[in-house]
Length: 299
Ligand code: NAD
Image (cartoon, rainbow, N blue to C red; front, side, top):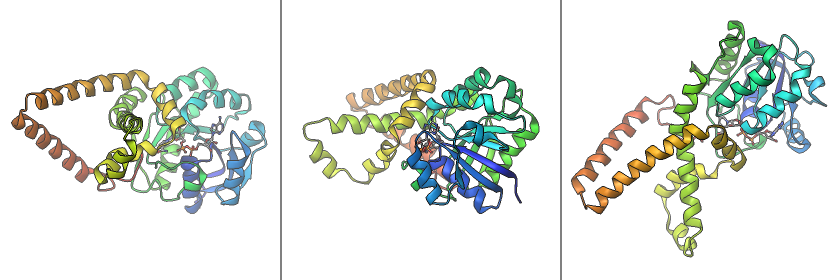
């Protein structure tokens, strides 16, 4: 069933491209129009059949649009809203896929104030370390979650439409307040990415880095997989959610100080107890995951 006649994707990369492919596969969209920062990725998206046309500008893109997905790095959202605002038509629902929500909400209040009933922030909890439209995949959102963080001003019909689209992509949708979203994801996504980037960066700077990497095996691969994620995207996420991430880093540093103290004291019993508790929590979490294991995604 066609849910939107004209879908506009701003930022046709991994996330925007996968949304387009999933909705096309489900027969839920008429025409898909791409808007981008540079021409080459849009031409590639056209060649791959992810979009049907490249917009010549925002006026052209938004003419008759039912839905716009902003799937750009979160640091670009504000500038994109400023550019699109003068051309936004009353019927168009605007949503996003950004990994942080407080900044998206602030940008919406700042630049789309007249359109708040139809601006519905969202975040698909799915992804990969790969980026760009070549990595787009129609099944990316299957069995994954999408968190919607509605505004008090939202028209319930617009929220329902955003949820319906993500469900059509195969996702399980839940709701959260934007502030809570940013605190939760600082702990379980943003902090782990910082740790992975930091560890790889520190080891790579050592004189014997080649020897270290040559001997690194599956434990290192698992722990650092997400250090292969997109640097611009992660710079933006860290800056957008800076306060919450700083709080999480401080808590983690306290935990590391505790672990260090146990090791310094050669306290095997307490170390083993800590490992047991952590293993139990990790095992319980793995069993409760939507995808059964929580593996394979960047977020
Ligand atoms: P990507 O690099 O694959 O795609 C981003 C696209 O946006 C690129 O095509 C780029 O050219 C385009 N772009 C950049 N600035 C633009 C601008 N000003 N105007 C128009 N287009 C612009 O990145 P992605 O992984 O698809 O991430 C997109 C968004 O989704 C980010 O906000 C990210 O936080 C969020 N997200 C990513 C993941 C993940 O694991 N990759 C998961 C969930 C959410």
